Image 1 (cartoon, rainbow, N blue to C red):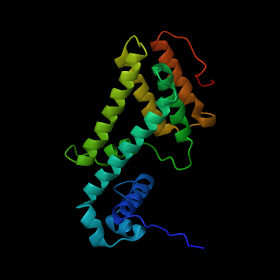
Image 2 (cartoon, helix red, strand yellow; image 1 turned 90 degrees about the vertical axis):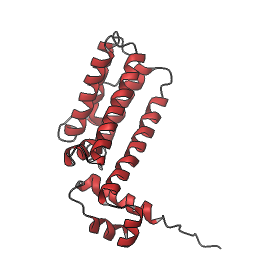
Image 3 (cartoon, one colour; image 1 turned 135 degrees about the vertical axis):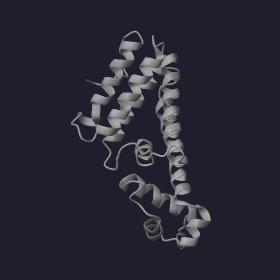
Length: 203
């Protein structure tokens, strides 16, 4: 019987996997290159062959998170094709469940923007660009759902999202952080002419 062959990930992926876990759990500034090298099991030369600096590694970490967040958004909204109101509500139901996850440590983009405050830092720019992308995607859904003021609804929902990221684990918001979803549903229905649907979260 043939033995199973374990394929080792390329050094770049191992470095990025390790950095992503450490940056998210402990903070970008708190994690040094030497720690990433030790945890990933790669040589220092290998790390710098793949990432010219820590800044480059942080940018790669955020770029990966941007792709993962976009895929998450697409998966959630795909469950409600052609129904932008239900899509917006579903995003906040899913957000509540993510906040409930044991590995949740806040929003990586908010954390990066707060830790790396220099506007010239490329990672800071990436974090803010992602926030703008979220705003634009929320606004597109708000407009498609017929919100009376899409800009106002977008601002309200993004503020709710940021508050949930910041305080969701510290507050008792019920199973699955249901208060996040119900608050979003109230804002959405209020802006889009009222009328709840079967997809509304329980209050």
